[in-house]
Amino acid sequence: MTSAERRFPDVDPPVEPGLEPYWEAATEGRLVLSRCAEDGAALWPPRPFCPRHASAGVRWEPAGGGAEVYSYTVVHRGEGAFAAVAPYVLAYVQLDEGPRMLTNLVTSDGRPATEASIGQRVVARFEQQGKLPVLRFTQSH
Amino acid sequence: MSIRGAAFIAGAYEHPGRVLPDTSTAQIHVEAAVGALADAGLDLTDVDGYLCSGDAPGGPIAMADHLGLAARHLDSTDLGGSTYVAEVSHAAQAIAAGKCSVVLITMGGRPRSAGRRVPPSAGPAQPFEMPYGHSNPASYALAARRHMHEFGTTPAQLAEVKVAAAAHAQHNPNAFLQKPVTVEEVLGSPLIAAPLHRLDCCVVTDGGGALVVVSPQVAQSLERRTVKVLGAGEAAKHTDLGRIDLTYTGAVWSGPRAFTEAGVSHADIDYVSIYDSFTITVIITLEDLGFCAKGEGGRFVSDGTLQATGRLPFNTDGGSLCNNHPANRGGMTRTIEAVRQLRGEAAAAVQVPNCDLALVHGTGGWLGTRMGSATLILGQEDA
Ligand SMILES: [Zn+2]
Image (cartoon, rainbow over all chains, first blue to last red; front, side, top):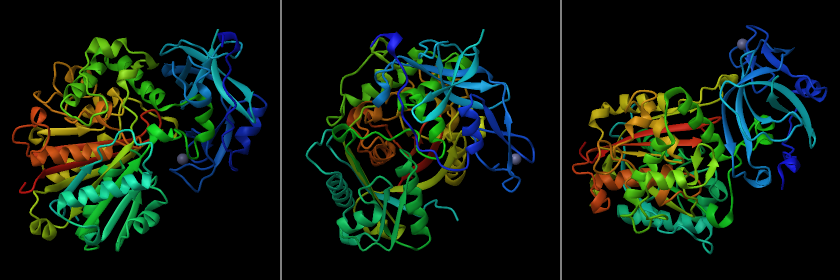
């Protein structure tokens, strides 16, 4: 497969109730974070409660989408449906709002990136993949 | 309640098979159980406590049925590869509480023949991990890359861990890989998930093992030399609501808990069994357990430190990197080799002289997201 044809596979993980505000925003291409209604702490992955203030509830707030690469790996041997995608970049990026999230880095046209560096500035983008809008990051300009 | 001295490991058995296409997983459990009980001088009819992991065929009820056990204490723990390290402690706790006196712990699996891989992203976080191709090697590679960035750890230092494991495996006739390797050979092997090469990764094997943990009274009645359980610790380390720090593991908590309970210090430890799912796992774990300072692990493992003749001999059977990694869960085989060392029954070329105290550490799960950590400190029978 040439790099121009490489696409991340549709994996369709099970989605359970409770995160509708996240998925509704994501479908519109917007990233929202669940924050503790008591102390405002961002909770990632999103969840409908704060473990430290379980009775407080959460509020859903938009995030800017800017982030910095915290760590990454170029995966040369993908497993299962990812075998045909390799090489691809699996990364942790740290959002400007604080949370570190697992993701992939992609090129500006949505193809799997094949290189990265720690500290690299990236920006969030959603791509519909199978049934879900999936959050990935691309080099910011 | 402390478990120090409350229980003894009387039997240990590592299944000799590494590729078992025609043996059922349940049969591996049976053969391991019979082997460990024979090692202890006991029978299946003596067992009154049974532990396995969540991946045992049918779980603990079906396995108790299959083994015909009259157990009055049953449990299954699932802390991934650290399960069986934790279960020695759980067995000791049950014995100390008077619930049972002969606990059988079995494990078995056929990931080599059956091709089963643990999905790395089960649980509520699945929609936020599964789409990204978070494979086992990739998860550990994320930790390796950050460690290199913060502390200057090099791929050659990672390779030293494999070199030591391979040096030991040449003396183990059952080891899946028995050939010594050099740092250059590790660095020359194909990249799986950079910076991890193929030879930074554990083997995938079929097989299993079992342990028999008994009360002090039972231990005294047996002819076989036993191993004393001195202390244990457990922890879960996870993504911390989006504040994950990839440079450490749950060993920072489980290690001190085990040392405190055992009442011993690092200088007392003669041998370590460290779950070596990947080379980076060992380096970070040794730091977190306090055998060297945070960030010094790469330098610490250089110059043959981990070899049988080095300052801190580790995984003298060849570990998961070379010997055996049944069911993708290394805690059982790490514990078994520590028992061999304390009984003076390791391969002659790698037996640590006067091995009085050993530490076992298991890491179950993923350095890149969440893990179970279990530390166990064991001593000779009269420790
Ligand atoms: Zn809160």
